[in-house]
Image (tube, helix red, strand yellow):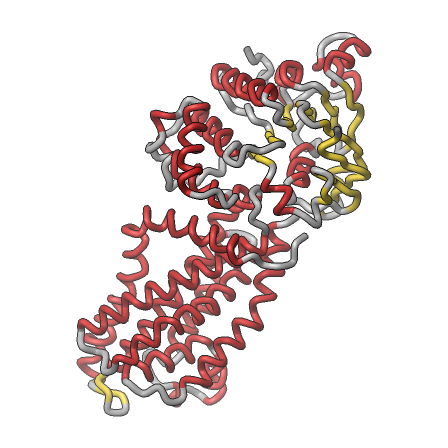
Length: 255
Length: 252
């Protein structure tokens, strides 16, 4: 078995997903965008009418950068949970691909890179949207885009680990209910962590979403200070989880 | 010349032995069949040949190369028509072939031309832009065959190529396979249809519970044991093939 990854072959997998996506984007795009728009309206405008501001920042402006983070996060996780699972199990796409010069590691890398690309794309659309609503203060916001690729890799890898071990597609409910939703709610998107009990805040501090939200907020508001540590943490998480994602997925597919 | 050599090939899945210490050699240009009912280990052998299943023990050499060390090189020279339809259902027939060609690093211009030629070869020219969902089962099998030929393979692996097809589509596939054989492509197929084995195969390996009972030409087997292949199989294994039970062996 080849232990290496050939990026060129991973790119072929990426390219396949892009080809299919360009056929489907009209239907799938809505799924990923309607939700963030609803959050922005419900919380930003609805709840915002009562909350007014957090630490002097209007509430809708407080949550808007977090919506970039959460939207790009869910794009990557949907892709590497449901998307990967369907290709692996129901459509047997992986069988088709693995019968060609593409090897298992190339395939997994292609899946991850595609999910990260999609994550970057969906986050970018939210950046454009909130800019249109004048919720962006700084041109630094552009710097978020490449970071979304990094964070996309983080969430793709975490999801891939989950996909490698679930007994069936219904089991993703546990992943979303017990892991993704709490992370979404308690990573500082909707309120600052310091109101949480210290133990909970500590856990939240280590989630990648917390750091991505911090990065987005800094760059949307125009201060790049303090994001280096958060970026470094994302890289660390990528490096820690990557071997796990590859080993477990490989074990699931190659019998 | 032997193009594939397997020695002591064994595969266990969770303590169940799917393939049990088998040896076989396949010659360049021949049509070699693995014959047996479901669960005999045929598909596992096929999947080991294209490196998706890793042998528990034993070796397989394809083109003289060990499959565990050179999967990409080997796979670039073989074609696989799988048992399950695993086309990209979102794409057109033509696009399916072009996307597949990219995995082999075939440039777009070449692949487009090859794809059109292959669609013509399997009689799907008019369906080039048709979505896969609108193709009949027989057409999808034909497209899978076309896809497996995109890299002009030296070895073509066919896992139950005609299962579930109506007699007409089945004959179409057979004709294509005969044609490919004449062009010196090595064909390896699994089947539980005796007629398919009799018509196409130069040699067959009769498999039962993961083992190869015997390897010989259908003609020799029938002469030695008397009766048709169905009878030979029954005599050697004490079993009927699955097709018989379902009344599926009434092929032509």
